[in-house]
Length: 110
Length: 471
Image 1: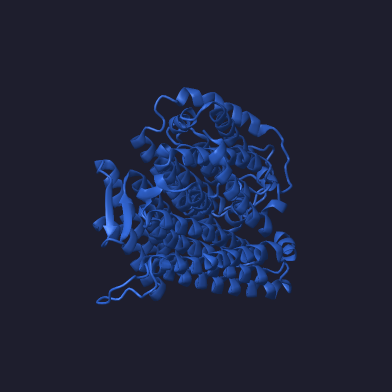
Image 2 (image 1 turned 60 degrees about the horizontal axis):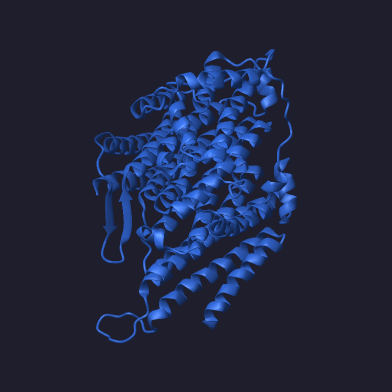
C-alpha cells in the first residue's frame, strides 16, 4: 500500500513539473517521470496476487503476469515518443535559440 | 480473419515495402485503400452480423468487427485512395500514410482497453510525423504540442485502464458497464483529447490548419476518428457516460462553429469546422459512424481543394477571382458539409438533432445553421478583381464527391429532408454575403501548451463530477 502511494505521488510530481516548468525539455522530462510512475504502478498491480515469477513447473503464489506483460509495450511506446520529441525540440531550438515555451509560441505564430 | 488481414496487415506490409523500395508508393496506397473499401463495403452491403474475436487464448486481445467499425474502415480506405489520386507528396509520405491506414483500421476493430492504447499511440506517432511534413517552425511546434497533449491524455488513459484491470481482472471492453466512474472518466478524457472534443481538443486548429493539405485531409478525415470510434463504443455500452459525452459533443459543436465564424485563415477555419463537426459525430452514438463517414469525405474534399489555393487568408480569398473548376469544387464541398440534398446529408443531420433532448437539440440546430455561413462566406465575397496563377484541381475531390453521393444514396441521407434544408441553406448563403471582416485569430492564448495540458486535467475532474450531477 505504501509503495502504491509513493508511485502515485511520482505521477503527481511529474504532473506538477509538466504544468509548472517553462522549459520544453523540462516539460518532456516531467512527462517521462509521469509515464514511469504509471508503468511502475502497472508492475505493482501484478504483485497483488503473489510475488514469485510465474514459471511452469513451480508451485506457490505467483505474480500476475498480464499487466506486466502488457506494460512492456507502453515502455517501448514511451521511449519512442520521448526520443521523437527530443529530436523535434532540437530542431526547434536550432531555429529559435530558446527553449522557453512562451517564446517559441510567439515565434511560431509569426 | 481474412477481413483483419486485408484491413490491418495488408496496408502495414505495403507501407513497409514502399518505405524500403521508395517507388510505386502511390500504387501501393491506392491498392491498400481500395482493398479496405472493398471488404468494408461488402460487409455493410451484405449486413453481416457483428463478429467478436479473441486473439488468442484466455488473456487474448478482444476484437469486434461490426457495422460501426466497417463504416470507419470504409472512410479510411476512401480517404487514402483519394490521397493516392492526388499524389502531390514525395516518396516517404505514401509509406507513412499506408502505416497510418493499417494502424487506424486496427483502432476501429479493437475492443480491448490495452490494444486500443497501443494502436491509438501508433496512430499518434505517425500523425505526429505527418504534421511536420513540409518542415518549418510552425509545423514542428504544432506537432510537438499535438504529441505532448496526446501523450498526457494517453497517460491518463493508461491510469484508467489500470484501474479497470484492478476492478475486473481483464482489459476487455465487455466489462465497461461495471467499471467505476474514476476509470471511465480517465479513459474517456484520454480518448477525447485524440478525438478533438472540447475543451481538450483545442490542439486541433493549429495542427490541422498548419499541416500541408494532404495531411490535413488525412487528419481531419481519419485520424480524429480514431479517438471518436472508441468513444462511440463507450457511449453505447454505458448510457450514463454517453450522456456526459453528448454534453461535451454539443458544447464542441457550438463553440467550434463560433470559432470558425471568427477565423481569418481559410485552413484554420476548416479545422475549427472539424472541431464543430466532431460534436455532431459524438452527440448520438448510434448514428455516429454514418456521420463520421459523411464528415470525413466532405472535409477531406475541402482540404484537398484548399491545398490548391496559393494563399490562406479568408480576406484574400474573397478578393481573388478563382478559376471555375476550383471555385465550384470549394463551393461543392462547402454545400455538401452544410447539408445540400444528394451531395450532403440533411436527413442524417436532422436525425442527429432530433434524437437529443430539448436544450441540446436546439443548440445543435443552431450550430448546424452556422455551418453554411462560415463555409460560404469566403467564397461569395464581391467584387472579385484580382487574378492569380492557380494550379488546376486534381481528380481526388471528384472521387470524394462521387463516394459521398453513392454512400448518401445507400444510407438515404437525403430522404425527405430536402424541403427543410432549402431555407437553411438560403439563409446561410444570404448571410455569407454580409461583409463580416474577421481578421484576428480567436483564442491564441488558449492554444498554448500549458493550457492544453491543464484543460485535459480539468476534463477528468469535470467528467468525474458529471457522475454526481447527471441523472
